[in-house]
Length: 215
Image (tube, rainbow, N blue to C red):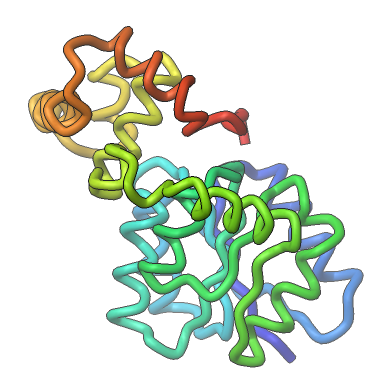
C-alpha cells in the first residue's frame, strides 16, 4: 500500500485527487494540507511514502517546501502537481529535490502511473512535458536573464504579472510588504527593467507564465 499525502489549496482538486486514488488499487491517502504553512506539520504527523505537492499555495511556496522536505524527510518522495507547465519550474523543482512533475490537466490520466513510479524510487515526467523541456534547453533557456532569479523572486514575479498588489503578495507569502518591495527591486535589477509594465512585457515575450490558471 502506497501512503499518499495531498497538499493543494483548492478543496475541489484535493477531492478529485482522492477520488482518483480511491478508484485505483494500492493507495491510501493519509492526510491533506490546504496551504504551504501546514505542510511541514502534515508530514511530521502523518507518515507517508509520497506527497503530491502544489507549487503555488498560500503561506509557503512549493519550491521552498521541496527543499525543506528533502532536508528533513529524505525518504519522502515528492510528486509536484501544478498548473505550471513552463520549463523553468520543471528544472527548479527537480533541482530542489522533486521526484516527479505533473501538470494538473494531466492528473486524470497520468497520476496513478506517476505515483507508482515515484514511490518505487524512480522519477516521472510526462512525455509532453519532457519534449517541451528538451526544446527549452535547446534554445538556451538556462542562459536567459530570468534563470538567475531565486525561487522566491520567481514567485513574486509571477504574482506581479498576474496583477496582484504588493500588499496582496505579502499576505499570500506571509511576509511584510517591505520585503516584497525588496524582491521587486531585485527583479528589476536582475532583469535590467524599470517598471511593472516592463516586467509584464518581459514575461509575455519569454512565455514565462503562459499556463497560469485559477488552479
